[in-house]
Image (cartoon, rainbow, N blue to C red; front, top):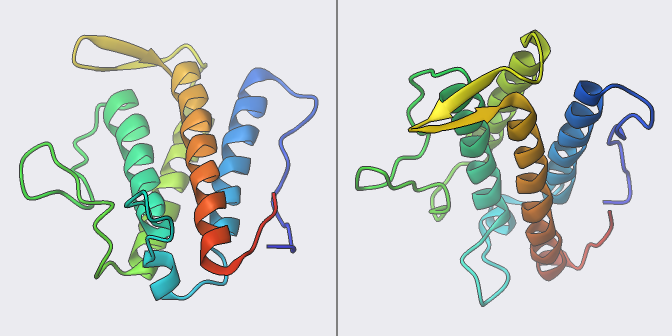
Length: 168
């Protein structure tokens, strides 16, 4: 994790560039935390008090990208990539037999769709809804930065427990 190739957010820029830059930085941080690990290490639930794994986090964040940008903002029919056994349940954290290549491909595709949605938006004021709740693109970008940052903290702990690697 010493070879940091992340692109840092702009220090001077408009609101869209700043929010998009911080979100992309968080995405790249997740990828960096997972880099160089084997399938078994990515699946490993390395902290005994939790069922989290790095691969589960990748799958979860792919679902968050899908849900917020496609379903909420664009009102697309976009079923979960990893549905659970019952309606409304998700299985993104069930990684015992999960394929890391598939998970990273889907995550990258969802991130690319999300970036394209943000770039095409007329403003940060455009909004979508979930049920009776309305969410602006500004809210969604801010929420996604928070979502990634929180889970990247989990990824820090998992990665250190797996192989001792630490770093930004």
